[in-house]
Image (cartoon, rainbow, N blue to C red):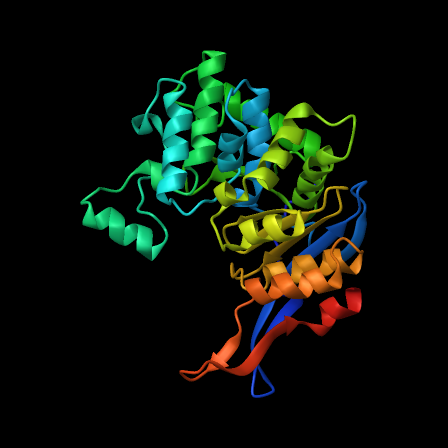
Length: 337
């Protein structure tokens, strides 16, 4: 079990730096951990045993719980349940379809109403004079899966986000089994569902075990379903051109961000890297996590370079976007590779 302390500035490691004109302009500090397929630590930076809220990085495990609790939803809807999506019309339509199959609609969703996350979609939404809708909220797929499970169970629909609801109890069982930790505390996530606190190591272990369902004969069928759905429908997990979607499309790795600077990435054999940036920034997270995985041969260097060119925004200056600096790994991380 993780300890009861959150990460500190004193215990944090420098993960990446931003330079301009050869000078360090910004420093990203936090924690990172790399685990092997058996869940043993291969590399540790900062305080990965300190507790944190993984937030949406836990959605794939929550999806396993929804299926285990009885949700009868399509693989595409499973991918949406894992997602922190951008609320595009396609995402909204899939969430609505998931609900409709249970004879439910958006009024049953307990997540907040929102506008689409991309400017183009937002403009079209406003032009059509449509109001905010919970279908556009980034967690609508997760909530739809919870409702589908509750419907199968015959448990109360109105209280599916309560921590003592039967569906949420299954979620906690999945955390204990996959992360090998009991949540240290439970808060309320931005979507209104319970938010479990655990160590970064526990998160990496849980998602690594989930990813390994793709290659293990003894894996839980629901874990295989979730992992395969994420890879088959990566657009549903985030959105075209977005970080998690790009990683899954280009590298075949499970990738799931969480709010406040959380990221976990796992290979099909169960090797997993998790990162928490202390101030909640996510700018350096994929650079750190993917580099850790590449150091163990889970990503070819050419593929790593190609994908990082897509994911890492260049540091530029002027209208012609002349290179003016770079985001690069810290010496602490490069020493651990």
